[in-house]
Image (cartoon, rainbow, N blue to C red; front, side, top):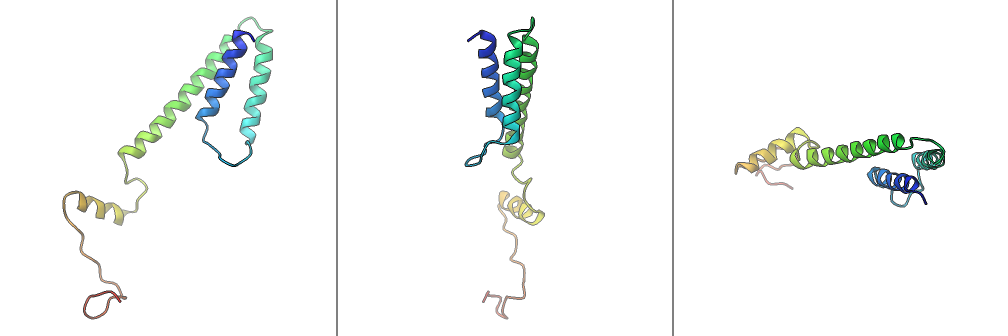
Length: 116
């Protein structure tokens, strides 16, 4: 196996690692297209004079996908209230400074203020 083929195989595996996991599901159309593309590039790379251009572009794309994944992870970690509704975010903000929001009255409450 030539170093060009080994490089392309390594890039292909790195690219697959950056794609979202799909447990217990067959490979997607994207996986099949990537495989076809890499196999055609590997065979064409052995015939071309400068096969490093495609490898460098693919490596940059893998680095971009890795950076995007890390960005999303950091956004989720440091902005935990992004997926919450306004009421829940307000309740958690009050708890953060040591306060509890008052219990709101609902139609299910009985006359004594206790839940049925």
